[in-house]
Image (cartoon, rainbow, N blue to C red; front, side, top):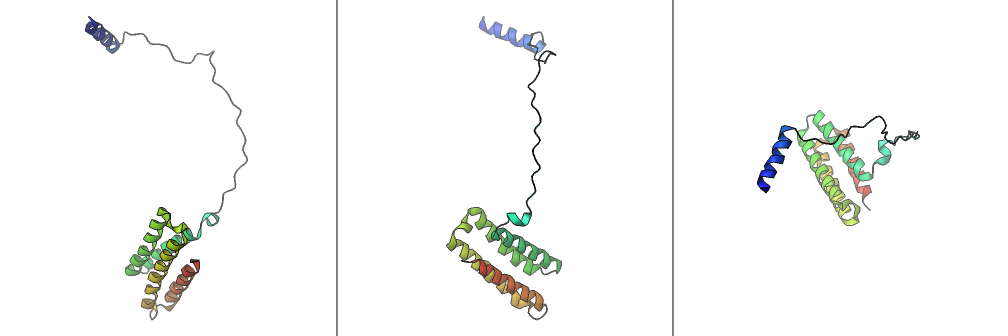
Length: 143
């Protein structure tokens, strides 16, 4: 007998003969109304003010990658990218806050960057000088 009642209810719901409740809002019902607040506009913060030294270092290396690619120096671009990857990995792992790990990472990046400069000394000495200058900046970031 219970099974027959269950099937009867299911069939009634499937055929659409069951009556449901009317949930439409009537004219008497009103939603709560709040006055719109006028907040003063917030001045945008320039992107340079939000960057820390590590972010600026990563952005600078990405620009160097783009410059190397523009000059068709694909080997340099690959080496530059291998400078950015350990920075990002250690930044995401939270190692850049600890002095010892941070200095080791920066030393490795500076050494790799410095290894690129001698190749450009004869053909493009301004590039070699710029790379050496960036190396000194990175070494200056170590505490």
